[in-house]
Amino acid sequence: MARYDRVIPPGGMGNITLTIDSNKVRGDFRKKAIVWSNDPERMSVALYLEGEVISHISLDPGGYLSLWGVKGKVPRGHLDMINNHKNPIKIIGAESDLTDHIVWHIEEIKPGYVYRLEVEDISKTAGDYTGHLIIRTDSPGKPKLTVIVNGNITED
Image (cartoon, rainbow, N blue to C red; front, side, top):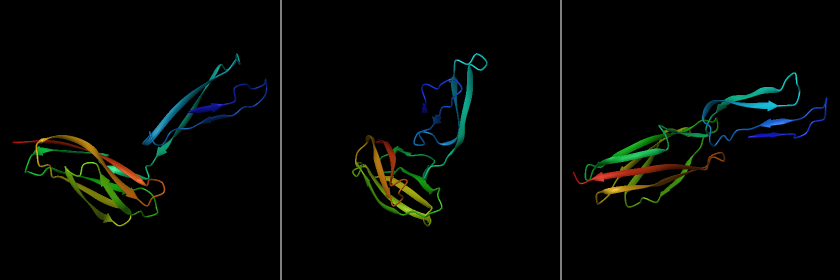
């Protein structure tokens, strides 16, 4: 997003502010903005904003678990929750809208920094489902993590 002074007097100065939404950008980024003017010697100037966005808490391999399999053979999935900051965090709770389909367990791998979420299908019937597992933390930067869980359970 760009904010700028709309009118600058001849020979004057103005401000341009470029920002990114760090909720939508992950990892290394490089953004470009073109500033146009009525200066005949320099009609445009390119400005670059570059850096790296590090998530407060990363979900590895991502925020999505697929539980596909045969009923009774208990499909399972897991992901790691990784704290990317120097202060440790705690997982303080979890809830889901899929309590008829899944159970979960959270294991502390590296206290305060790495947790493993394991999810197991407990569906009593075959079918498809999609829902959310919400993990609550004591991190002010990321108090809630959302994991999407998708199941596709067949009879055989």
